Amino acid sequence: MALDSFIFKIFPVREFSRTLESLEKTKATSEKVAIVADYLASGSEEDLELKARFLSGQPLPRGSGEPLGFGWSLILEALLEAGALAPGWENSYRSYGDLGEAIFHLLEEKGWKPEGTPVTLGELEEFFREQSLIKGGDSRKRKKLLFLNLLRRLTPLEAKFLLRLISRDMRVGLKENLVEAAISKAFGLSLKKVREANLLISDIGKVALLLSKGKLEKLTLIPGNPFKFMLAETAPSSQELFSKENREYLAEDKYDGIRAQLHASFKKVWLFSRNLEEISGNFPEIVQAMEGFPGEIILDGEIVAFKGRALPFLHLQQRLHRIDPERIKKQIPVSFFVFDLLLLNGDSLLSLPLKERRELLSSLPLPEPLRLAHQEKIRSPEEMEKAFSRSRERGNEGLVLKDPDSPYSPGKRGKQWLKFKKELSTLDCVVVRAEWGHGKRAGLLSDLTFAVRDRKGNLLTIGKAFSGLTDSEIKELTEWFREHALEDEGWGFKVEPKLVIEVAFNGIQRSSRHESGYALRFPRIKGIRKDKTVEEISTIDEVEMIFKEGGFP
Ligand code: AMP
Image 1: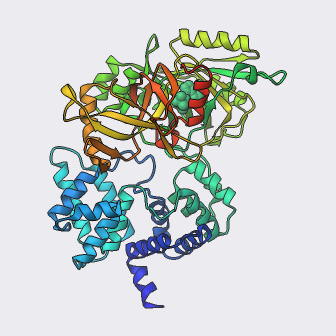
Image 2 (image 1 turned 30 degrees about the vertical axis):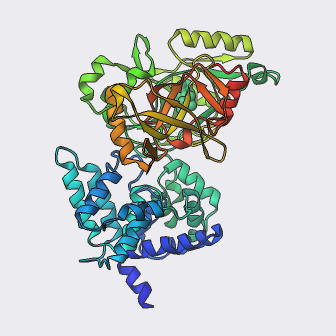
Image 3 (image 1 turned 135 degrees about the horizontal axis):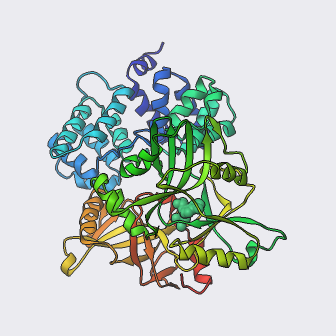
């Protein structure tokens, strides 16, 4: 065995960072896939799960509950304390535009030598898990110490990729779909099979492990393991909707709340948000209601603030803050409006037509505060108008029109579900810049420039909002923006495009001031959408559609 590969076998994080280094130097996608396939196929089974997950830029499995709670300002503080940053490090950071790369060069220049035993992939995972669990008064100190203890044992190259993994972006041109392709190559399976498995299990590490062992029969929905949600497209005009003869839709109320997957397996119950984070702790009444369910079930629906009728989303937001959920559940009661049944007692129902899933769902007794979502059949624009106004009378946003024969396709946004929320249109945008406020808001990053996306995922600015957030939200966000700053522009920061806000407005007009070519009139922030990611924000196509319809929501 060559010395190099021998060292790699016993020092897995070294092998991991060398693999990433080769990926960084490789341009062609097929070569990247081949490098990753070789890497996954070699070494121990134990490490396979972690290799696949870390390569996709995920420190912890999706749905594992806690966020890392580890931002740049904390890392910088720790690095300064460790003497890892020489004076003038800011210039280095600026010239590389990436903290990982800057640290690599700074440590190399210092002649940094790792101490103690090399780190294993399992230890790396343990590090992330411990970081996510540290809470309380002295958490900053403890987090820093844990980080420094790990850093001491890393080479500069390993430190670079650790920082990139913390930022969840490996920057080697490797997205999860390439890791899927590498798994298919490494274990001789069709890419379609790997993709399907990943959609069901939503944990690329587990997918790699199960597929490597040929455990195809285990590739089904597993209670406790969240998977991607099926999503809706914006509906076209009502004439277009009914242009085909005998067209029928199942029209459901569009609830303005938090999308959630409820999993129950005998006494255990989980609630997952649409970015697959566990939110069970925030809604104890829903969890308790399902604890008595005698079997296994997975439901899809929307959690709504509800007092006799649906309340606006604003109310629900407070339930997402971690203030004593037991106390706040009385002030802001919720209902879980269930609109889909995806697994019942071991059988996945994904491929059944919606109308059959709904029939089964309607036959189940749902305990309070679970309720069956309102649904009716519609066959014409007139019936749709009526259903729409009835939904609005119930306090809901509009309608989601669903194809009665459609299967449930996890992760798919398509024409089988069409959302329709005529009057109340808002856009979900991502904040790209935060600027210092004036007067009462001096010292706070309160003026937010936000963007929508095009089909390729490029972000295009569309407006700037100053109002809609409370003082305490702005204070909290100021801290967040500092932690996620990309560039100090003097009057504010360019920030990582991660924070999604829902923006209400009075109209849309053409404008050369913003990259999208449009500007929102009188934009105001309706809410922070912690449940949404940048991939899910509104598109320029939606903006154009609202503009064409008269520029008014
Ligand atoms: P939007 O947030 O405007 O992109 O609309 C899509 C969202 O509507 C989904 O992700 C769900 O959270 C929500 N929604 C509300 N009611 C329904 C429903 N009956 N069916 C599907 N999605 C719904």
